[in-house]
Amino acid sequence: MRLILAAILGGIVMFVWGFVSHEVLQIGNMGMKMLPNEAAVVEGLKTNINEPGYYFFPGIDKKSNPSAEEQAAWVEKYKAGPTGILIYHPTGQDGMMRMLGTELASNILACLIVAFLLSMGMFSFFGRLISATLIGLTGWISIVVSYWNWYRFPDTVVLAEGADQVIGWFLAGLVIAIIIRPKAVPADA
Image (cartoon, rainbow, N blue to C red; front, side):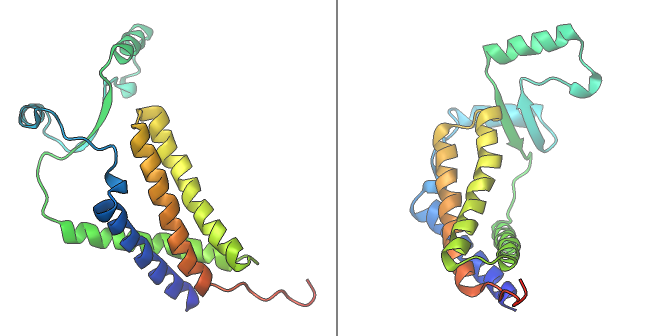
């Protein structure tokens, strides 16, 4: 029961932190820019892209087994720029409540996993708190730093996401560490 309680309360704390981080402190929005000439760019997208997807440019079709010449041409295009990624949806969406619900559910699920891991160990309160915080740091390093490396995410976005994740996991970890208690050590251990 403590595990479920820790997951729910930790997830709620993380969800509330996300609101504070993005809407009050603007940490989660650091580095984002508005598209210059947005109307013209959006019209070009509407004209040329019909399917939602994750687009990388300049593109190369790796499935067609490109020749050495095609790969070399792609490398030159990449060096010359521009380069980028685009997450694209040709239609709008009116699902803010669904997205908020999904975010809360994902926060609770993540906290359930962390609470489960912490319940298996013989950690002190501070050990549990540091462990939860380090899990957030690990996620940031393994995902966002890779995006910075491979997709050239802006430094500001990467650092802001690091602060957002570490602080969020520290706060959720605080709640989890209070609720999850270490198991007693067996007398014969």
